[in-house]
Image (cartoon, rainbow, N blue to C red):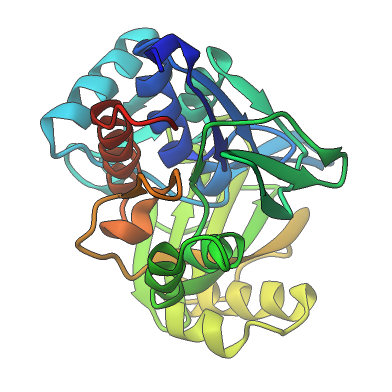
Amino acid sequence: MSETGRRIAIVGAGLAGLACASRLSGAGISVALFDKARGPGGRMSTRRIDTPLGQASFDHGAQYFTARGASFRAQVDQWAMDGVVAPWPAAGPRVWVGVPGMNAPVRALAADLSVTWDCPIEALERDGPAWRLRSPQGPGDLFDAVVVAVPAEQAAALLEGHDSLLASTAATSSTMPCWTVMAAFDRRLDIAVDVLRDQGALGWAARNGSKPGRGPIETWVLQGSPDWSRDHLEDPPEAIGAALLDALGVAAGGPVPAPIALQAHRWRFARSSGGADGALWSPASALGCCGDWLIGPRVECAWDSGIALAEQLLADRSPG
């Protein structure tokens, strides 16, 4: 089968899935992505919240990223030239963020690809030698191969019964949760620094407005530590908001004023444990996996895994 004749479905349009799709599409392969979210971002999402002072934005997932390897550095350099990323010195040297939100680079990648949003994939189904994806909209088109680019726990459920090795590898990977609180204030908080790390229940707290390209409203993103988030995973959002605001006050040396807007978001699958596989591809089942859970808990790891899987698919000339 020629490269241009292959059709590949990718479940998950976060950075790993988009990196894989971008490489495959550039090689002439037809790629269709499907994601349950309403728009680009995944764990690099940006949320906008209305406040009495206007709309405020929050990077409520990944807070920043670094670029260590040559492949990702080249991509980040291109994003910088395109104006969709910029340095954020407050978090350290050689630290990057999306502009005007963390989802900007993901949005830029998705713009050139075929992505169906708001489309949760419930199951994979064999149809002869091909694959179909089952969603609430019903069975879709036929594909020669399927890439699963979602967190390990979700990947295991999709792969079960189709490829025992891929499913078991995903099932044995663990991901820690994270509670995130987004808080806007009517004045600047009396906190000298823009970033706080490892302050009791707070694994991370940052003045979101200190990032380049953000608006003038005083906004903070508070993230519970992995252990704290796990221990309070089923607590109501209101209790999480109050607890992490209290923790911010302790770290700041005094209570913070009442926020003018407050929301909490629970990431059940936030920080992967990582692995040594890089990416997984099975020519026999025509199924593959990519994601940071196959390398490590950094944004760059998701990119590297997606590119690694694309290269395996390009090297495999068998049908699918």
